[in-house]
Length: 248
Ligand code: NAD
Image (tube, rainbow, N blue to C red):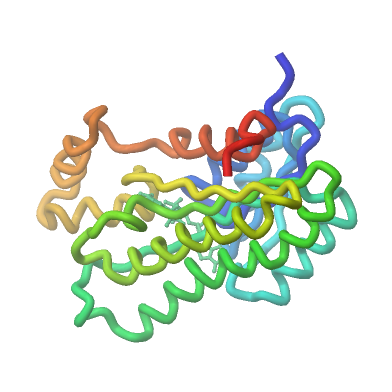
């Protein structure tokens, strides 16, 4: 069977941990060459090395430091990648959460910080990648990592939900704007996944016993468990691939 992402060049943000790390390795194992990026250089390097080790076919990975809030650096990196090896897809995954808090108790500095990374970071990635993807003869694919918090009303996740709702609807706009040029855009909306970010919620459910909090949260899901990074990496790779050529 041919590799799902054979010959594709894909940039992933927030590769150094959790979902981004798994998306990076899974994409390389499906034959993609992955440009892994993060502000965490150790984590990002580790992800690129892990991806190299499992890469199949012409797949592989390299790491570049990137702060997604730095529009100039984002555009420069994307332009360089497009020129040197082409760009077929981008996964705007980098994101942060915040401590559980009601709207009136969220400090303005927290709001500014999370808007900058979760919203402006996705915007920067799309704006940098779109001209290159539109120029490709066979288009390209954008996957933005939103969240269930983008369409459910989750108390105490006010600023986070605001950013993920924005990502979700902005992704619809990109899909509508770029579809005629062969560019697909999709958002994945994970529930709680056991990563450094996801695990912050365990202690908010049970501050005395985070493990008990984790179990309580897991019981809310039809499968009775939380997500694993691969549960998000698999559909992300599907959305990057030609198998999803009518999914946008
Ligand atoms: P994580 O904390 O494990 O990883 C996030 C990565 O993003 C880290 O490596 C971090 O260094 C990087 N990052 C942070 N700020 C950055 C910046 N300015 N520029 C570049 N990189 C930056 O989190 P995760 O759980 O893997 O989350 C990944 C994405 O998935 C996020 O967008 C998050 O909102 C979303 N998500 C996570 C869950 C969950 O339960 N884990 C659920 C729904 C959505």
